[in-house]
Image 1: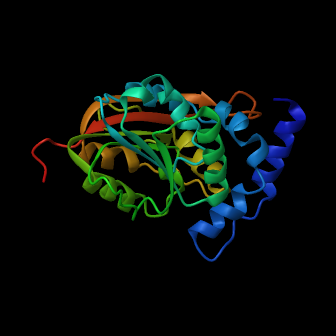
Image 2: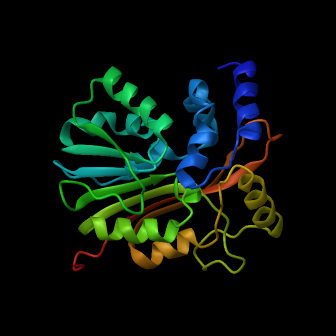
Length: 246
């Protein structure tokens, strides 16, 4: 991907309309102009997606839901294990992103990967409870993110797995075993990302840890393209719904 293509993406990120009567319209207005080079640019911006998918302890015959899965790029990381998975459903509110996902599914000849044009806080699969649910850089774009996590909890079977990778900032007084961020980090990145309706939160990770048993937690920083070496903090969380849950 060349510099000119990068400029086009950054132009659309800055100039695309972030307005609309509801969340679905805002997503469509923002992403519809970025389709051509969407995945290439975000592959260098959204770190840890492949690692998160690789850490999922999936059993044979699992039903997986990728909430806010967009173009389906996340499923590439599951490709080596797809033959042992019963189904993967890519859920997203943005029709333009799902069109790209459908083309990818057709090109890859994935027979057990499907799309659903739906809200992550309301989607209900036909197969009942899921074995695993993932959020890959989507919680920061879901206004009612706590509803999305609560809904995922209900959709997961007891012992089911949740996997999340996303940008974040730590609380000022972070838990002893969690990464701590400087005041500058906690002030700069939420404001920088908010311009594109990406809302970093200090509460995502603590809330996930309060709902699910932690199987794996990785907190890191990744380079942001053309930001002069600056790194944005992100986390990878793999959790399990308690097996005794109803």
